[in-house]
Length: 78
Picture 1 (tube, rainbow, N blue to C red):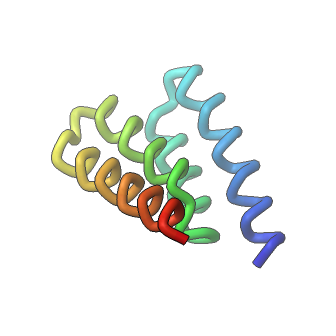
Picture 2 (picture 1 turned 90 degrees about the vertical axis):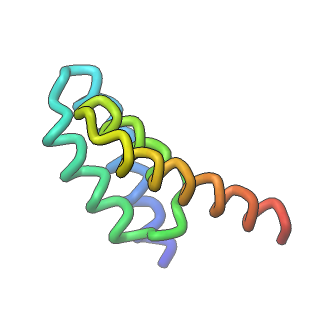
């Protein structure tokens, strides 16, 4: 579990780099791997929303932002 969380964090950082380079499709594949490793990683869901918005997929982006918000609220209530 800890190793998956660390790998998901590394993938998120890689994803930031890919977005900066304008490689949104590669970034989307990267962030999907991070989410698969840690489905409760709010920052990854937020980044996926950002990428999808950049690709013009606004409804899907909103779903991801809502998921990130839900996870953040759940974390704060613990």
